[in-house]
Every structure is written in C-alpha cells, then in structure tokens.
Image (cartoon, rainbow, N blue to C red):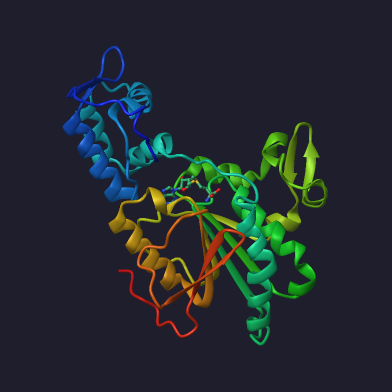
Length: 299
Ligand SMILES: C[S@@+](CC[C@H](N)C(=O)[O-])C[C@H]1O[C@@H](n2cnc3c(N)ncnc32)[C@H](O)[C@@H]1O
C-alpha cells in the first residue's frame, strides 16, 4: 500500500523492466494508480521499481505478457482487481497495537461508554475494527472487552472485523496464530483466551462469539451500521487526501454521538472540526464524536 521511494534514486527512465519478458511504461503505471485509487482508495506511492516485483509476479500468475493486458483484465473483472490489490496491499498488524490506544480503550473509553449507555434497555455495545487485517486487532479488542467483563456483564456486545482482503479475513475467521504472533501478549491473557495447538494458538469461543468478520472496501460509500467505537488504524494514511476526507466523514456518520474513533499512532484526522473532540494520553490521541453531533453526510 505504501511504497517508499527506493533510496532516493531518480526515476528518469520511462520504461521499467518487470521481468525478463515484461515491461511497464510510466503512463501505464499512472493508469494503474488511478484505477486502484478509484477502486480502493489506495494511493500507490513510490517508484515503478518498488512495485515491479509484485506486479511481475501477478502478471506471471495470470500468464499475461504486458501491462496493457493487466489494465484490461482488472478493468473488466472486479475479482481480478481484488486479486491484484491482495498482492499489493500491506497487511502489517499485531496484537494490542499500539499499546497506548488499548490502554485508553480499557481505562477511559469502555468505562465512559458503560456509564453513558447503562440506561439503554438492551445494553448494546457495537465496535468496528475497519481494516482489521488478519484479526489481531479485533481479537485484541475482544480480549480488552472480556477483561472488563464484570463491568459489561449482561451487555449485548458485537465486534465487527472487516478488511478488503479475503485472505486476511480467512485467517481472522480461523483465529489460529503462530506463537511468535503472540510474543507480546501477556501469558495470562494467552492462557485465558487461547488454546494451544502445537506451535499455534487458537482463539477460544469466548472471544470468537463476540466477533463477526466481513469483507468491506472502505472506499465504498455503503452504510455498514452504527457503532460506539471504530478502530481504523494504519489504513487511512495510505489513502489520497480526497479519499481520507470522505472516509473520515463516513466514519463520523457511522459513530453514535459520543462514540470514539481510534486511528493509528500519530495519524491525523482530516477535516477535524467542532464535531470531534480529541483526547491525548501517553502520546496517543483518540477522537470522540461530539455528543450534539448531527451526522454529516459522507455521500
Ligand atoms: C497496515 S494494515 C493495518 C491493520 C490493523 N488496522 C492494525 O493497525 O494493526 C492495513 C489494512 O487495511 C486494509 N485495507 C487497505 N485498504 C482498504 C480498503 N480500501 N478497504 C478495507 N480495508 C483496506 C489492508 O488490507 C490491511 O489489512
């Protein structure tokens, strides 16, 4: 998704070899960028060289000989555009990442929601991990919620994990993680919420029962529901500014008044105005939708 410029090199050559047999022209790469930004909000930054290995791999897997063939294919078939996105997107994630966000979630946000929503008859609590990759983030949310179980006993809790990549969602749905993925998770939490299977750990039903996974493209304006909390961490900063503003407006729309938005560490909220209130603790900023907010239209 984020393609840093390779070592400050200048890209003066117009044509870049992708593999021994395939080359891509600058204008073809530009067309690809425009297409992927329109389809998924993704801004493919960086040089052709940086992208070339992944694009070449994709061309080979489809037995294609040229970049124009690739453009034709992804323009005509949604499934192929998605498959290309799968191969280009960065799914880097981890449990309880960043720790300061989960600290605020546990110590401030959940107690505040509990205090404000206790009068609602069915005690609903809805949380969305948007761009939650292979599940580490939504499972971390679920563990934090379970740790405050005494406070939230009898509540109707739903946590939705979504991503654009089906392969990431398949891992999330399985809930099976290698030992090293849980290296930074306290052993008491691992013992409570995971069952050991050889060198892997499987999320227990207590966590899984709180979670639903679904495929969503955050660049689409579709309505997914109302939430008390949305985690959209390390997703938005790779979108173009126009897409970021539109997404921030939609996230505002999806939040209940007084609901909270968690972005990645250091990420800024585009279009920050009086309809949001920022709270910073231990270097992490969480954004709260104003209580009096009238939902902005994101469409
Ligand atoms: C860097 S990972 C961050 C994962 C997780 N939020 C975290 O902070 O640990 C970004 C995730 O956003 C997903 N993503 C990127 N563009 C998306 C889009 N348009 N719609 C939905 N998910 C998207 C990617 O597939 C990837 O899993």
